[in-house]
Image (cartoon, rainbow, N blue to C red; front, side, top):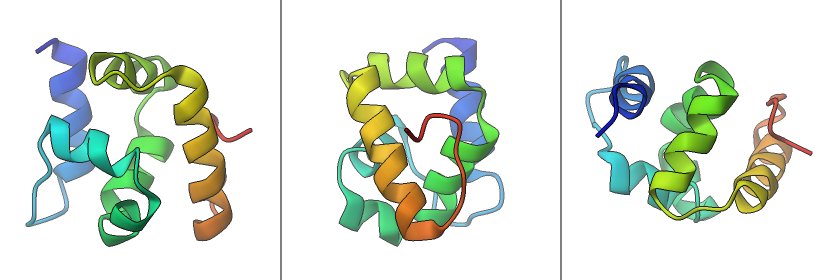
Length: 87
């Protein structure tokens, strides 16, 4: 796993006792209902992780950049937050 991918997981999991691994976070980024369960981690991913690292993470888990952007837009509407990837 690259340094960036490790940094992604460190960033999203830092304040939470229930930790997500890479596959778990990737699953959240593909399933809005699951993302709502881990909304803090998903929001940290979309709001605190640099966009290029988000795209690198998504690619490592076979999530296309278009699918990630669509997810970010849907999640943004649910949270009311603004994310750079949200279209």
